Image (cartoon, rainbow, N blue to C red; front, side):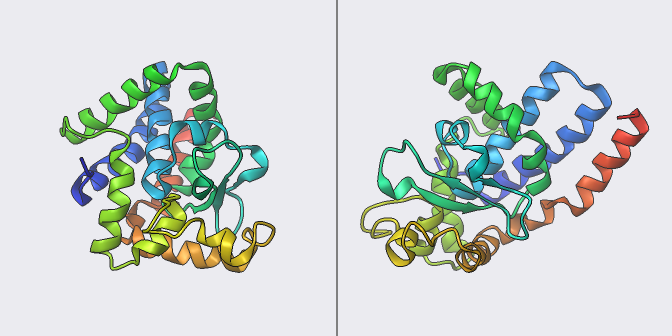
Length: 219
């Protein structure tokens, strides 16, 4: 099943609301919700599988740059999966919770975290047909709705075959050059158009609320 635009909105709103609630309560349950939210944001923007998120090296996490992104490389199913994923929605949120997300994935069996994430997505959206893989289908749908070439989206989501012609970034610029700022900026512009319906959930408004709540709590 493909996650609809409305369901994407519901997921993003729940994610930012949960963070503010966690700051007030700080429970193990709410911390897990933050972790699941971080996974959803990464899957939504680049189709990252849980295993890819878990294997992200610190040197490949570039969230403090003008154009934040992560680099997926190393052990992947296909070479096309090696890619740059711009982060344009929930940058501060992912920055705050990615470390704990990787720790949770590392200590949790694949079957367990897959089932937990599936339950989270279905409970939040009310759609019992959705799974984590629905976000990859959502990228294709978003490309059609927001008028973005599927070939360009394929670069970010790591699709191979006829739709993408392999890893276009590496084939065009070479592996050594594909992380340069002009390449990342071009991919970021694509991602902003692809996710334009979700940019309202970026962090200016919500981060200030988080900071205020933490100050009130004395963090």
